[in-house]
Amino acid sequence: MKRMHLLLAIQSVVAILVSINRLGTWTLGYVLPNEFMRWVDFNNMLVLPLISLVAFYLLKKTIEYDSPAREGRTHMAWNLVFIVGLYLLGASYGDHEITNYLHVRFCLDDPTSDLCRIVIFNDDEFSHWVFFTGFVMVNTALLFIQNVFPHREPLISTDVGLLIFNALFLGAGILANLGFEEIGLDLYIIVFLAVLSTYLLWRRGKQPLFIYYTTAYWLGLIASFVARALR
Image (cartoon, rainbow, N blue to C red; front, side, top):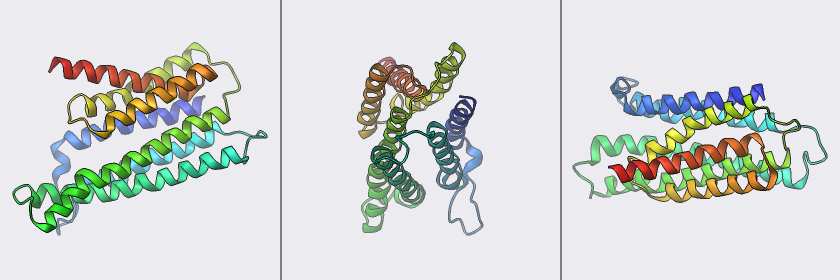
């Protein structure tokens, strides 16, 4: 559990850094004199996702342990889902960050040219579809790997408290996205994962990731609906 808490804490720190990176003015400078990319795009594409995805992988390895289920068909299937999801997440970041930079810099005043039409579609549509597909695959795989490898010791109250504390940061990220930006496919993704994690928590009991995801997704959804109602 100590390693799991640490890896979830890393995800919490990444969530904070993503907000700082997106909202701070210090990241708007260019990485190189040729202005190929801003620091905000570079951090969003190569630095922060890499930290997050490495933590996801180590979390998966932490959940797994030697048992008859290891390397069985179910385990192998969810490993494949996880790997494909990681690839799609990486592809989505690469597509989105570059086209978002080009969109903001060159296409706000000329959205109808052929070049800008393609850039905007990649920025606002295609990269989002790829991202959400990868996001669902990675997080669903982690939930079902936890289902295949249930935690072998009862969780103490301190562990539950730390899981809920870390979940607050993911919930805050959901609030920032759903509560204050235009809602699209992301709402359905979060609802799906909230229902799935709640179902697994109900069926299999207090497993670490079931607690973490159920808390994060439902708090994020409820806070988002409240925030939008008050706007």
